[in-house]
Length: 235
Image (cartoon, rainbow, N blue to C red; front, side):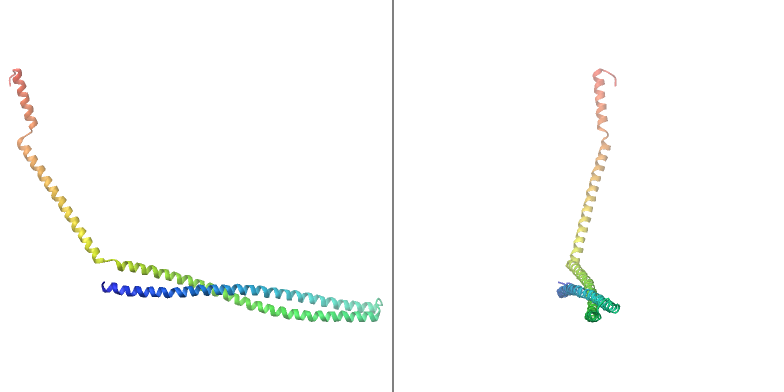
């Protein structure tokens, strides 16, 4: 193994070690995102419950306010009736006093509902801020995780390509190509040699035929002479 291959093996080992070390952060980040999503779900549920209490406190506040106003109006009407003689004065004072007592009772309840409503609305605002922060964190971490996974894939692909390139024996490949070139050149030379031999043989046959003349014409002349002799014709 040459120096370059040894160096590559060292680098490859370090790359695998780095890849193994990347696995834990990826898994830890995935678990962290799952935990954040659980917190987000819990916060959403809590905010919904607190919002429900805030809405109920607001409704109670309005109801107690209306009741207090209603009893105040009743106390006024009772006093007016007593003043007009439509109601006994003592009964009017007694009933008006009780109406005002009920008004005070609902006024205090209205104040408590208002304080609860303000407190719950503050809790909702705090939870809303936390939820927005959690959503932002989840989105950020998910984007970072996608980037990290992409980098891992690129590292794996690069490592694989480098490994394949390192395993290629360039010298033996070049030597094999040179041997193939020599073999092809030898085959081409042999083909040219056979071509020249074939050409020489054909030229020799042509030369012999030319020297002997056309045998078919000689035979035809001999046949013609024989027929004339047979018929007694003059040559």
